[in-house]
Length: 310
Image (cartoon, rainbow, N blue to C red; front, side, top):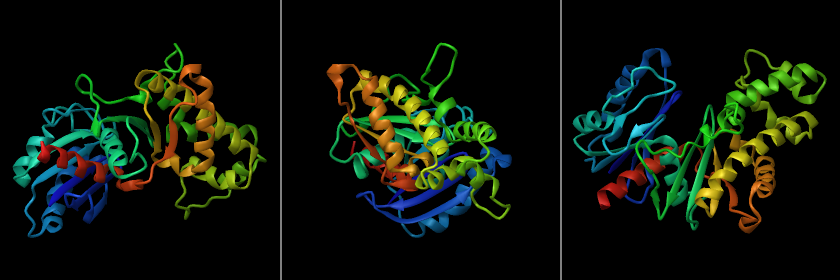
């Protein structure tokens, strides 16, 4: 058996899988940021014995939410949870599990999962972008993660959109979209999107403004459509740099905002073509991620499978 782990700022996922990448059993736990890295390690220590049971682990793969040294398994830092900086996660897990351990950035690992088992199957190279609380990316070429120099993440979120320091993440992350919506609904309080947000109550599980975009788009709200078009244009401009440099055969859109589905896909596809030099048009195919929340765990299983095979 193989173990796949996703360590993020809001959730911890642990999966037991086989060498085909199939998930046999899994655990999903909420992360309490106030307890820091120590709290997450305690969760792992308490959850693994029951998950692993009588199985013998051959290897462990980890997708971590932040920059890591993938060669050593040491965490560079976490932007969301205190206490991870310079922690040797690979060494700690090897000692705890007795198995070989591979650690990489979560967006890299999700890219590997989608490339080998999701929307990227049959394409090469595969570029993956995750649109969540932040914006991350990963490039898979020849079935393996492209790193470049250490720490080696395809940080599409930190590509600048202008000389003032505006980044893709500052325009296209979930938090950025929330802020944009709050600003615009004040100016257009009679819009359907504004009404949906204003009518929410304390019992609603939809707490972030961006979660109302899908509903407003289905009802053809003009404000929602304009917001999505702006986000898609910024994202497409950032992705155009990745296309000109790496020429992926497919770009996969993942993360929470990718749940907007066809409207987001269509806008990005159209906008991207306009930012590409003529020789590269129509450009890569644009696809929505297919693995959902299992992208990182499935990619983690693939990561350790490659290590075992090597």
